[in-house]
Image (cartoon, rainbow, N blue to C red):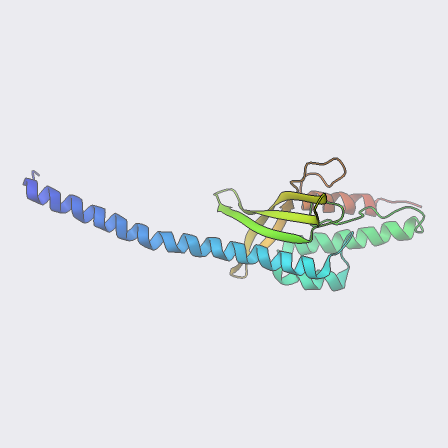
Length: 191
C-alpha cells in the first residue's frame, strides 16, 4: 500500500510520539527500581553500622539482619555459626576461630561509613557498588564492595557481597564463598 506523503508524516509522527510516551513511562519505573535497590542497600548497611559484628554473627545479630538479607544468605550464616561453634568445641578454644574480624566488608576492621553508589540490573545479576570507609585522615581506608541483591517477598534484599578491597590481609571473593568454607572446615574439625 502506498500512502500519500502527508499520511506518512502523520504515521511517522504518531510512532515517534508513541515511543516517546512509552519511554517516559519506562524512565520513572527504572528510576524507581534503582531507588528501591539503593534503599535496600542502605537498610542493610544501617543495620551493619548499628551492630558492627565480628566473625560469624550469632543468632541475636542475625535476627537483626533478617529483614535485609535473603533466605539463602540467612541459612548460610546460621550454618556457618553452627560450624564455628562445633570447631570451637572440638578445638577447646585452643586455636583462633575460623573467621576473625568483619565478614560483611573487605576490611578486617570493618567500615564506619558507607555511600551507596551506582546500582545496576542486568539479566545475570542485580548489584550496587558501595563505597566504604574506615578511619579518618592518614590512618584511613576507602574501598568499594559490590552487594548482590535478589527479590524476596516483593522487595529487594542482599544475597551476597563481593569484596573489592585491594590489600593483602582481607577476605577474597564473596561472602557466600567464605561462609561455605567455614561450614566445611568447621564441620570437619576433629579433636
